[in-house]
Image (cartoon, rainbow, N blue to C red; front, side, top):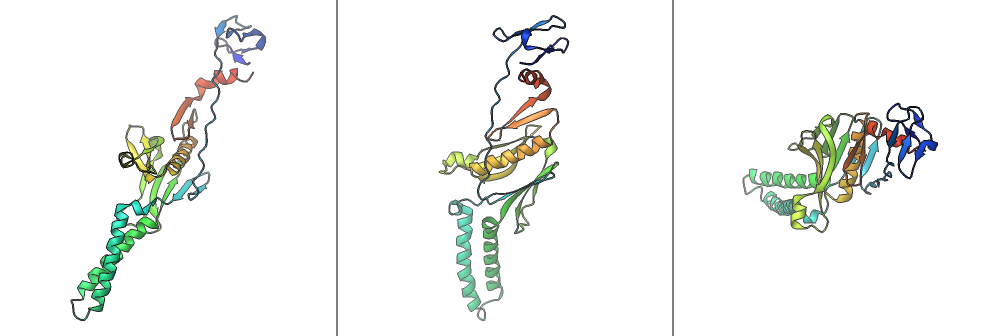
Length: 250
């Protein structure tokens, strides 16, 4: 076991270490000191990417893309708009066939309402959630179909402490058979920013893991952040851990 004297910094040979009593003596300055064995290093399980998630990563940015339209049959907004669109499709066809007998604005209005309904359905069913992380920001957007009512969300990484995920309040209240989760950026001022919502746990865990690794990459070089499987971050000051690391080399 390799130890370093806390008084003079000399390396302590194994002959001067009593492993049973956890005591060592420095042959240079005669200081006797106690030491502790380093805690065993815990291997942290990496979360595998979900099958339908696209991941692209370079030294400069990280890109995640996936659909969040799970169980559309359980989405009341989606099913309501779908019913609206079907009804208005038939009404539009009827009014178009009566165009010569009614005011032209009536079939036009129903036709536009029908198109709006199908456009809304496409925004939910076809669009993917895209997360782009650079060394400065996290940007979340829905595409490829543009939605003029929803702008991309940008979060400054400089203010983010860690990325965390948790089950949504509605999922807990309703007891969903497949629980839904939200991924949050926890800020240094103790506030939080939503990154993505209403995803299953495998997506939430993987997104949190990737973004926490991105935070680690651009964190203070004196700090090592270890991310566990549920997106929590353990911070260890490397300077404080150095004596234990040296002790573990023997």
